[in-house]
Length: 483
Image (cartoon, rainbow, N blue to C red; front, side, top):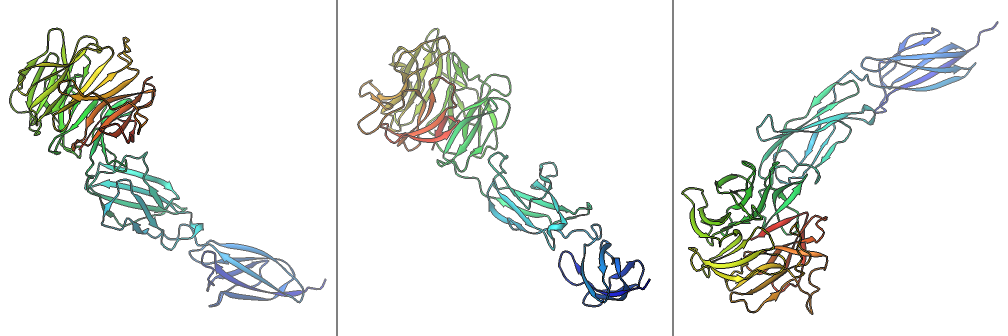
């Protein structure tokens, strides 16, 4: 039987770059000849018997590849072969071009971290681990990504925010398909300075109330306390340098604490229980100049120093069978207004007294329904409180139509701030207006709006002194104060 012959011409290229590969060893089955590709990656097999021919290409650091061709009589068959680099041949290049740039400043506390692979191709199937370190700590660290294809990590509202004004270090480790790895440089950035948040409020997380601060837009919300205890009733010092609040963390009873506006230096300043009839940590207030605080502890009203030093000073005792509850102290008239309650929360009265506790005089008598949250306006000429106009009463202390009122000290010139007027619709019928406070300038009222059913999370709202311009500030929030 006669033997027929043909020719084969081919080129070898890198599968990733498509560049020609020189010095690739070429062998065949059936055996014909062995040769290597030239500088242009070309090879040529002449006088090859016709029929099926398997060409095997071999080169160091590349995966061996075999390709079958059919050789025809008197013809030249062309073939292009691609070689894939061996997976374990080399480690991937360390990622670079981080964002934020190394040593960046004023980085948001919910940042976007981004990095770029170097000399990589889609076929490399690179994966990444990302580690974030707080300051120089080796224990305060977070594994942001593990075995991820992503080259970006975006913090969201579901993440624990980073701390303000804090240096963070982060590093990316890259792995190829063989598990060979390389680490990026250790990059750093500093987060933005702590915001000058004018609002504080209580928000419940997993059933536990904690204290937060924010700007009016809600874009700088910061969690200031974080525990499995109850932290409630934040009040900003008149000189804006401290936040007072109560916590039941130590004994199960509410005690008075202070902290800095950024949440640091949290400490108990009085061992007096801030408790009594329906007083669950809300019976206290700052002095007009922020050097002292009043504490309502059962039937006693005390004055304590802001630093906790010195013995408490007893300034007043409640009428028989009654306990002190919410209070306020005004520097313009040097008066204190305080709520007293009996065993029922519906048995409530408001008294005005001198700053030393003398001259205790009834300001608002016992009324049907609930009467709560007394305070003075900035000039000390009017008082503000909440009253349930429906006069509803049950064993739970529920209210069904709580309004905010202001009036002159003598009881005249009553204004129902929650009521509708010719220019405002007032509060919705299905909600209560609670925990009102004047802001530091005396130009706004900050308050809690909550559905009367108690089944919907409360909200913090703000309005003008006459009830106009009711504006939602924060959802799932209550007991707010503002500078």
